[in-house]
Amino acid sequence: MDAIDREILSIVQRDGRMTTTDLADRVGLSLSACHRRLKELERSGAIQGYRAVVAPAAVGLTFEAIVFVTMQHTALEVISAFESAVADMPSVVEAQRLFGQPDYMLRVLARDLPDYQAFFDSTLTGLPGVQRLTSTMVMKQIGPDWTVPIS
Image (cartoon, rainbow, N blue to C red):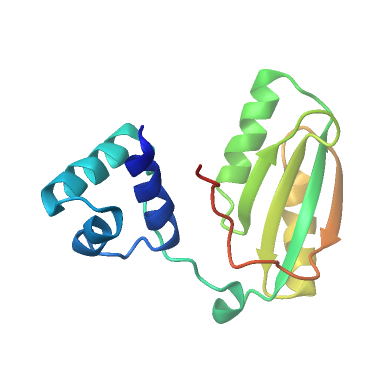
């Protein structure tokens, strides 16, 4: 990956709807050369996909919580079952396995506090291998979304 590929990544990360023609102009390549590089970045997995960033409040999701999960068992089959269950939950918009304690961090979106409480009580507490769940409410989201620093 050279400097031009990194510049392409930096630009499309901020504006995935930019036309290839505009992108080629921005990075100083011909349209065909830019298109080839873009397709290679997609094929190699450097670009994993394109998406729209939706404001949660616009779809009625005004409550956000971070849930820290401590596992009771760390056997591979328990971890796999837990991770599969979490991956199938649309309300969990981000999940990360951590080193040390706690074992996981989940970012959960809900309509409001009662909606979150119902999700917590009926779904999160039933996850395989869970010893303890600790929630904290998000006060404010800083920045519209996170981008990967490309240098």
